[in-house]
Length: 210
Image (cartoon, rainbow, N blue to C red; front, side, top):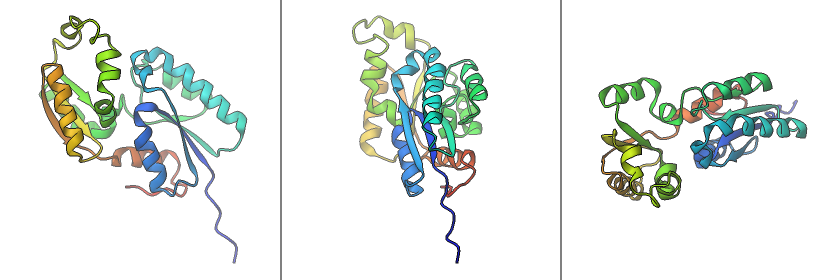
């Protein structure tokens, strides 16, 4: 009997804000043929840096010559289409959508959230865990509290799109919202949307949808 062909290795070059979730997707599929490399999540504060940083990682991965498929684990993420240009030029595909909030919630559900209350600030589990570093310190609010109004004066609520149903995370999200002077709502999304996209982009090679 001829042995079953082993799936070709897949590399996901992802956003650091998705690192745990991407690693979970890899683990759910045995972790044998999906490798994850992530760029720093703080780059979201300077999204214009993301496209060329992704290009460098893609080219380095191609030079290694060990991957059958290279995927970009980013949405557009505020790059104004520049990341799409890089992906087209480098012959790779990225996750679908404008940002991870849309991916986690689902496009239709996210549109409904926005229509219901446009002044919504979204948190994922990653942003909850690193709220002080990425938001309060990263945006300079800790050092200059007067910036809070400038950044968040037009917001009316925080929606925590939770990848895990964790009471500690829920309480941390509530504290984060309170520090912004906003009420907090929570929706448990899981990682099914991310899992399905990775499977589809990888061509289903040995992957299983959640």
